[in-house]
Picture 1: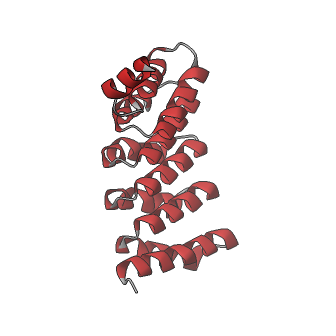
Picture 2: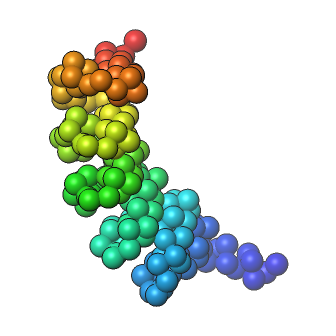
Length: 178
């Protein structure tokens, strides 16, 4: 019991030990599967000290590791991740682009709007478009209104039209709160 009390005193933030362990696995493991699990778990633990190691993991050669790092950066919601994430909206893999749009929506900062607009209106994958549209709604920035209105005029997808309609409503509410 005294040992546990000592640990609690020494490490007031309970996240310290699991975060350090997971960062070590993310950086040093030879196994892509272990690095992926570590990246995912860092997002669950929610410790701000994981931001930079997760940003570094965006350069991992394994798609799964990058995808989990992207998702975890979204869970952590730190704006320092915006700039490193934006290039992944252009990745070859739709699941990476989709995860990036979702993460930027979770971070929910206006600095991501200009990058999300083309993802919402021009991406060839509907899941990426949908994720980017939803992200724009979470951010609630008026710069998205005109491009989304234009998308409503040209889209033939019922789902895209539904997401755009809901997003425009969210943006209007954030601009003009009740």
